[in-house]
Length: 199
Image (cartoon, rainbow, N blue to C red; front, side, top):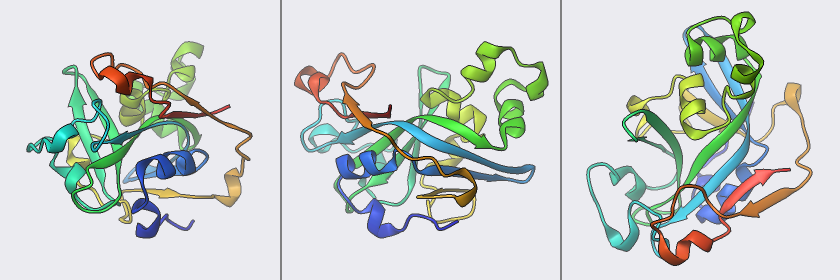
């Protein structure tokens, strides 16, 4: 499994977002390995995007990871209950990122089930299996990703992304661009077609 390199993450967020569709997010735990195929992402660019936490150059302790060079994770907490995993992109001070919104677990689903629901896969209902990792908070729970992963190098050993994994090859048929979710406050940025999904 070859990890995506810094050249990949140094691109603009829209380029990274579309190229991440069909890539594999890998989480290494002591208990085993979980691999998820990325099938939903959203791009954020603070220069023009009022949905970005760093729009207008707003710099805080919470969003400081966005101002680092691409190739690290930014994990933030929302609604008092959900962690969200972002891939920081571009150059230092660009404050751009891609939110990973959904993955399909292709390996380690038993461990993912225990992480997410604290019970074995065999005890899950069909809706629980379907909703295992199809949302930003859900996938963070399934992968056991929390705020300790803020600033995590994506070229490290705990969390990384591979373009292809031979055992789990699946062609991207078509990438669909649509409006992002849950950003009603973002004025004209509400209409940006910066959410990408695999049809």
